[in-house]
Length: 461
Image 1 (cartoon, one colour):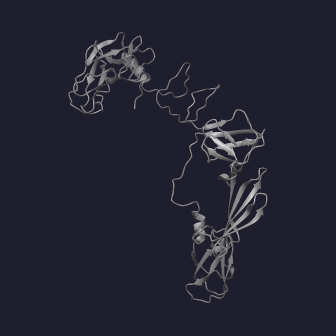
Image 2 (cartoon, rainbow, N blue to C red; image 1 turned 45 degrees about the vertical axis):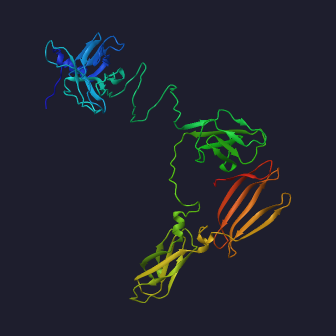
Image 3 (cartoon, rainbow, N blue to C red; image 1 turned 90 degrees about the vertical axis):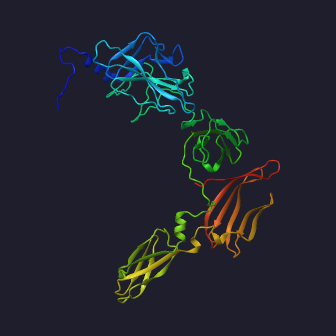
């Protein structure tokens, strides 16, 4: 493979070598002018300088071609005689054949296919430079200025190997792709995208009025997705202290005394994954709960007095083991015993038998998560702990038909106005002995009637 240097030291420069250098820098392109305009008559096209001193283009062979005047009625377009269908798309090319002395550049039309919006391909990429397109309407109608599309001005392909500095204004009219991290220095500013995601902060604290509960957020946030952060007297407030009403409003559960400094910041326009809706109710079983409800079966080999370990993932010893059953009594089994551990069962036998055994285990009923099928519906309600000033039962128990406790509600946080501001709901297991779920609600009241006007579930930490 031979090395080639286009212009060596003291060698005479040829037009071919110089043209090639120009083309390598700019590529075949239109640098200025060559704007398509309507000609003086129908179906003619003029090439205008378009405000530039001259029209300048670089041919595929690298020759610089310049027109210092508008080129009037440079091409004629054949009418589109189709009775219907899409316009025909014709292409206008600058044509220059390098290597022929005294031969000027010319301009030609390459017609498209009638009824198709796809222009014809470039007939010769070595000689033809595209200047633009003409949409030729059907039924012989003359085209308008809006049917003319000029080629974008500028270098065809630019690749900078090391660095580039723009001393003046740079305008990007198409998509810009950054393959590495971008740094903006010296206080760079830009237009704000109203749909972009970023953190906004309240520029100053709001001084609360006596009894105030509701506050407005200046720009929308995504509610109930942990995108709002509220501070009272510069202390972060847990989600249990307020409710997010909508995308621009939040409300403290309890009226403020007045004078507190309320400040907050929020994520604006944040995009979050939202799972698809399903047909389950709010008490559908989680994977771990379904696992706990199943009868688990395992098969293994006896290990004698040293034991054999069967692993599981229940995380508790509150389960029942169905005694191992030898499946092939080829030797003395002896006495069988098991040791329950939080995540494994150890099986022992005193005999010489080392064959297979079957074992099964399941979580005790009293340890299961409820509500379940047998808990649907309750039959007896018991009220107690009467608050005499308000004549309100503070504790209410809901019991199943068999007498076991299903749910208990308790009123809490009595305020100066005579209202209970919190309600705690405890759900019990099927035996009615252990609390397996607790919900807390913030209550608010209508000042006129004294009746509850809102009940908001407080997120659990």
